[in-house]
Image 1 (cartoon, rainbow, N blue to C red):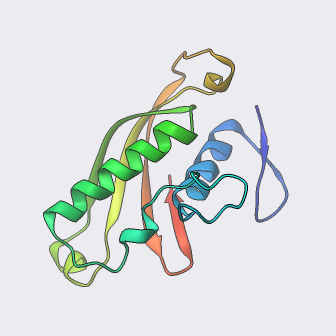
Image 2: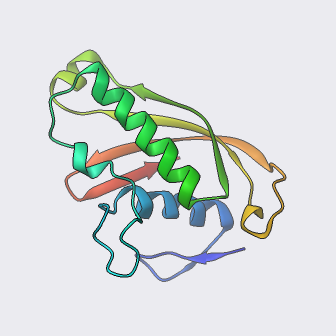
Length: 131
């Protein structure tokens, strides 16, 4: 199933559509959608807090839960943090997500097409997925 790029309006493939969906899910604050208040990742609410081990655990759990709830085409295998200690001290954290890609999962076909890993960066303008 193809999708449409939300920035350019061009047709994109199933994998790009899935990654774009992850950006939308995690970049949406919970309660900000009028007709679907429960939609979102809950991750943005944690930005700006002091980085502690408990915060990293909360991020991992929120990201995994949000993707599990709202994006059936991905099944999360592992979420880890990457970046140097100096980058973390400056408040720059990036997540590395490993997942199984199931392009027809929304139709009930849970066949895994491939295993993929992608990065997730938190920016001032929102969340960016890097493949």
